[in-house]
Length: 96
Image 1 (cartoon, rainbow, N blue to C red):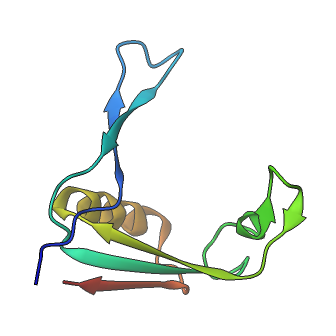
Image 2 (image 1 turned 60 degrees about the horizontal axis):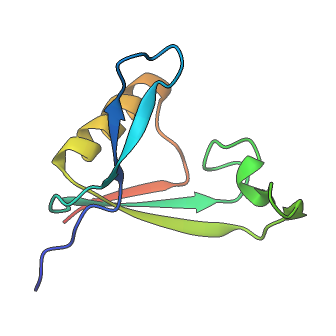
């Protein structure tokens, strides 16, 4: 089995956060250690219904499922965020 790569983006803080807080550092190339599956139905995911609205087209979307692969660093970020905001009913985290 080949190692799966993290699907998150690398965020780089900028020199002047007042104007541009961060820059996109590209795709994370680290090995994934966890799979995060989020059910976007407008309530379970905690998006307050925004996940079911396409702002570009102005259309309502059907419920959908998002799968992310997380490396050690992005998993730690996710766990910190969940410790602050509490768990979401629509999230399933599986360690690889």
